[in-house]
Length: 188
Image 1 (cartoon, one colour):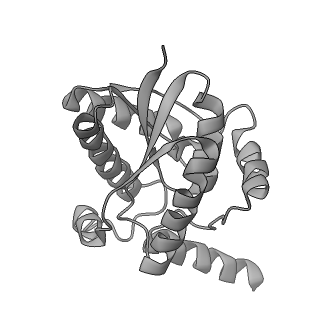
Image 2 (cartoon, rainbow, N blue to C red; image 1 turned 45 degrees about the horizontal axis):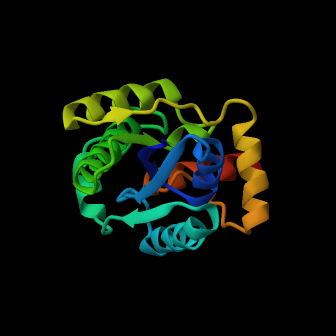
Image 3 (cartoon, helix red, strand yellow; image 1 turned 180 degrees about the vertical axis):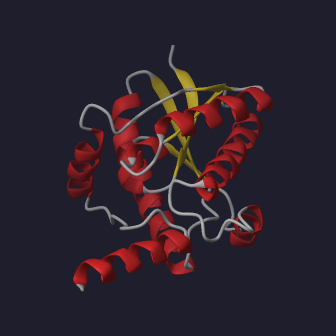
């Protein structure tokens, strides 16, 4: 019998990969909780893509309300941190804690996240946080590194197959500004 997992998802391309890799072993629910994503139009675009994809990949969709103020409060004072810095650690924890609480409420004994798909994210750190928040909530955590074994390249293939929107920044305003600054520097 397959175990039920509630998988935190931040975007449809990463969710498509994780669902493909986990479908044989788990009954998958996805939890879209991303108060970090700005502007609101970007958040809506990612949520709409995930909502469109969920039935195509056979997962049950759950979404939390958009709450960017909660995220801004959580990362206050970390605005100038680079991507992969302390702000990201706080952001991972915030989203995984919400996923663990939702798992308890919805009856999922196991949580995971697709955050490890990105080559810009530290899977060991994400898994460490995931283990901590899962234990505190009384659920289990599935450690993963979806970028391994060609994962990121496969997510690109699945994006083409499902005609998915692929964003070019993690979602937070600070990473968007950092990316824009780097692009300007390269064009000089």
